Image 1 (cartoon, rainbow, N blue to C red):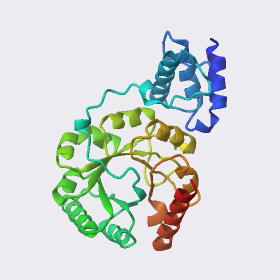
Image 2 (cartoon, rainbow, N blue to C red; image 1 turned 180 degrees about the horizontal axis):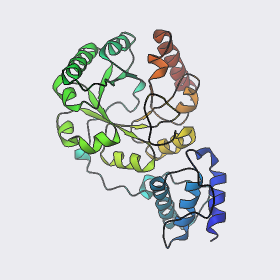
Image 3 (tube, one colour; image 1 turned 60 degrees about the horizontal axis):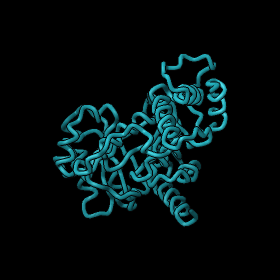
Length: 302
């Protein structure tokens, strides 16, 4: 097997997955591995800009797929969960389920914005209130929970899991670092739904093993609202992520607006999160209306 030639072909054939910083040359420091499929795929994934721990996930999965099918197909990007190194899950430890399709998902800076979205009947909202003042956080979380009471809007609280439990919120959303630090079992036993962020294969599979209520996939496009450790993933990668974990409720997030929304929804995700497209809009009411119409049109036409 000509490893460098196959790697180049993988990068060419699967060019829609190109993102991040690809290797500048083929003479890369490929991890030591006896299997030529692993080595070729790792290099090909690296040429597409996948970071090393994601390239490792892809290479192991393609190796397992080849062994399972007894055939190496350069066209067949691995999208079967059985080929990825995922542990057998104990479903009794799953977090409470949320709708598979959370619909239009607004990420909001304070409880006042939550109340505005409830008035517009936005189906899912997240309170992303940033403050080191514990008393202020408690007030905002309580106010947000009050704002969604007796409505159909589902409220997730970003980061502040204890305040969310105390206030009786519907769910909590955590990033990768918060996931490692928060007492997930405590959150699960409290009955809250859990959403987890992910930025690529390794983080996605790690979060999937926790059996959350939903997984957020991103950032799809560049965003100035958060400093991201990883490059924007793009629609091509979003599509293969969504295909791989299609049984999981999924939320696409990161730089998505009215213009990019159709392409994002075509990947099969059940929900799309918006930040600037709503909070930064000149007319948020009109922005929500247009986003909702576009999402509804997609559901009719696809």
